[in-house]
Image (cartoon, rainbow, N blue to C red; front, top):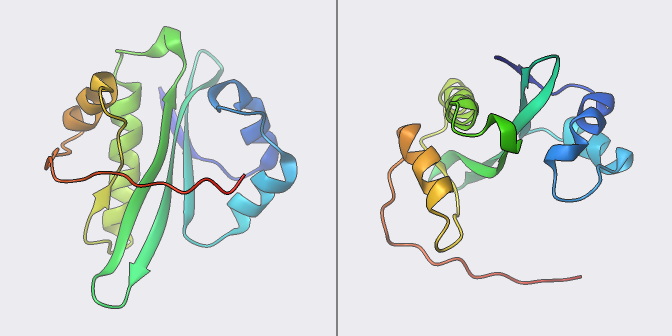
Length: 136
């Protein structure tokens, strides 16, 4: 397996099967150009099989942290360490950037995601509830 930081819109379009919705070139360009936005792609068998995206945030009283925004691994490549490797790659970048930590929100009952994050040294502190606003 090879993990590379995404650098082009074409790479993201080629990984389109991993995303929830079709990749829109203008949004992909915006993501890639925006400072503090990070996306790593995992490659096996000549193509993309997974990705992790993160957004670096800063706050006046806390400093920098990394928000793990999304993780996806193509079905045939699950349970082979791809997700763990991607999360660890993002965590390594967060450390390199001086982030004090990294966090992710996980849907209730998503035991598969929790297992991946725990296998990549994440800890479920059991204290969070996610509150959302939908502006669509």
